[in-house]
Image (cartoon, rainbow over all chains, first blue to last red; front, side):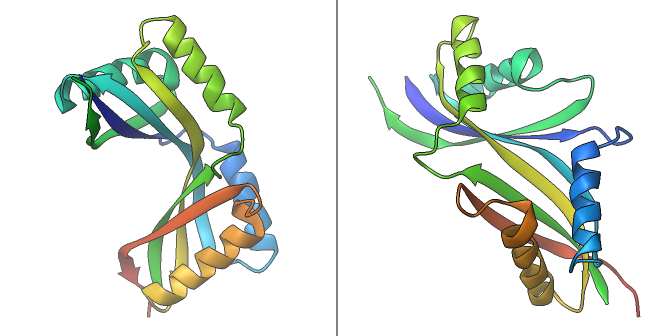
Length: 89
Length: 89
């Protein structure tokens, strides 16, 4: 089995109001940053997964995202599997 | 002036306890995902910035991060400036 690092980025679906993002955007525009707009805030998840290969790792992370990490009704997510860390025979 | 999309990833500094991440990790391990570990949750921010070039855009976003978007005492952040969207002469 190998260990893989995975990175998941989770964003709110288009059309869903991002209250936190709007608040930060307004705070920026009201101070020194009128040139910043369309700010949206999502989540960035790093994890380690033990699997036999990169495809298996991606399948596990995909299942974990749809079941628990993300909310597929309101959020989109993308998964990136990085190179294996080390081999544990 | 051009408009640039920027992506900021914000992670808690090493050594700072990530309570939200630990909670999700334990929930995963208690269900069908004992192979997932070292889960940490950060923020993923997308925004649009108007600037004369990509270096100026990065400088603006860097300042916005250190002043308002991130908390430099507890968080690390990285900024990626994407290709300009269109030119507004």
